[in-house]
Length: 278
Image (cartoon, rainbow, N blue to C red):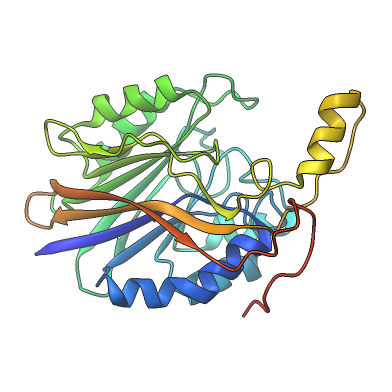
C-alpha cells in the first residue's frame, strides 16, 4: 500500500490554527492523505501548547503532534504533554522530562507509523543530550514490523538537520526539519529511500517576521529596546511536505512541497481580524 503522509511546519498561534480548521480536512480528502503530522510547539499564543489546543488540532484532522524547544513554555500544557497519546516531545531531553520522545500511532487506514521528535544542539538555548544518540535509542525500541518511521528534527542549524537526514537515510521513511519558520526548497528522496526536507516552514501569518508583527520586531531591532511581540495575521499559509511511502518497505517514493494560502487581511503584519476558529 502507498501511504500518503502530510507533514506540516510549526503552527503559530490562532492564525495557524484557523487555517488548519478551514482547510486541512478538505485538502486531506482531495489528496487522499492517510496521515497528518504537525509541529505544535508554537500553537498556543505563539509559544507552547495547551490541552484545549491539543484537542482542537486533533479535531482538525491531525494524527500526531510534535514539539520543540518551547515544549514546556505553557504551564497548562504540562499535563497534556505528559498524558496525551498523540503528542511527542524531543527524545533527547532528560529522561525525567514529562512526555515521550517517540510513539507508534495507527492511522485510519490501519497502517502503523512511528514518530520521533528530536531537538538540535547547535545555537539552541536549551542544551539537550545528543540527538543522534537519542534517535538511535528510539529506533532500537520500535517494533521492526512498524515500517513507516518519521522524524521531526527541531533545530536551528541547517547543517545539523542535513546531517540527521544522511544519518537516518534508509533507516526511516521521512526526516523533516522544523523551528526556523522558513521553508527550504531542498525536498528530495535520499539514495536509500528516506524523504528529506531541511525545514517545512510555518503554518501561520507570513506577512510577518516569523509569525510576529513586523512593526514590533523592527522597533526592537532598530532601538535596542525590549518590545512585546504579538502575533501577525496577514497572508496566512500552511507549509509542509506530502510524502508517499511504501507500507511494506518503509521507503519513500515521492515527496512534494505544499503551500496552501488562506485569507489575508493585508495589514503589514499588524494584529487584526482572523476567522472564527472552531
